[in-house]
Amino acid sequence: MDVLQSFGREYVRQLRDGSLAWLDAVMSGRMKGARCERLYASIADFSPQQREALRTLCAHLTDHVLHETLSFFEQSERWRLADEAGENLAELSDGLCGELYGEDGWIEKFSGYPASLK
Image 1 (cartoon, rainbow, N blue to C red):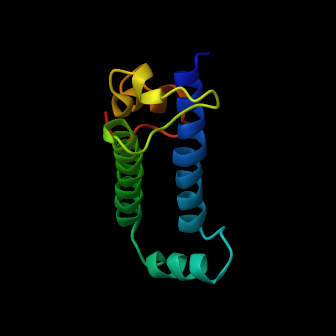
Image 2 (cartoon, rainbow, N blue to C red):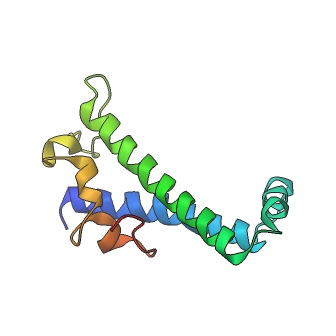
């Protein structure tokens, strides 16, 4: 697996899947701690349709943040995303944020959750 695909796998699994797993745990009441319990209580009376709408919105937001983060590093002249050898990952792609999408995109290939944008 090349460095760009390896990064994409870790990026999606750690950030996207980690965030969506946390969301599922909060929305099901499995997360403990005062903050998570308050969040769960705030949606306890939601209908199944409202819960699904909230989950869909959060999945879209998560993917948007991933997109914007990659775009930031791709467009920035001051900051860059590099591997351990110092190679700029933005230079390995014709569009880092575009790597997320499509049948061969990182989300489809590496995520344990369905794509929010089809």
